[in-house]
Image (cartoon, rainbow, N blue to C red):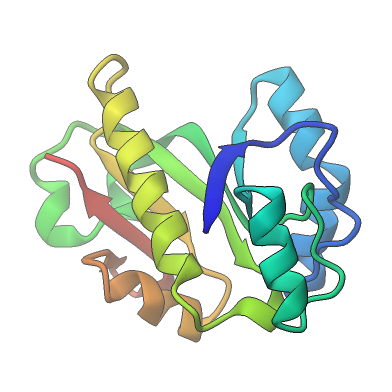
Length: 173
């Protein structure tokens, strides 16, 4: 079992490796700074208890400790222009559209393919929709890192934005 919580200074950011250097570096050097400045909010998946930490270790994940980050994502408020949205949705909106940007989503490389990404995405969508009840946001916007990531998001209803296959949008309303 895991728990999802806001990133703090006690989490082991240096021990995280998703296999994508830019995402690893962002988590290690920028995520906490952005959070402290109110630029974005990062949520991390960590073992839910010492017992779970021990189970991970018994399964061969010897480096997993109570403060180990198994995966993370970041959310921020943003504005997008109509040109950045799928054409069939753009006609519903004004020239600039407030959205929630899913800035990063990554899983430890040795834990990928086990469903943690789906769990993190579901949590991100729930948090974004809850926030949109108080602060306007028409949907979730994401810049996928590659075609594989784009297909992952499309599997959850995200639509490709025009001729930009790595820009995706999911309307909330």
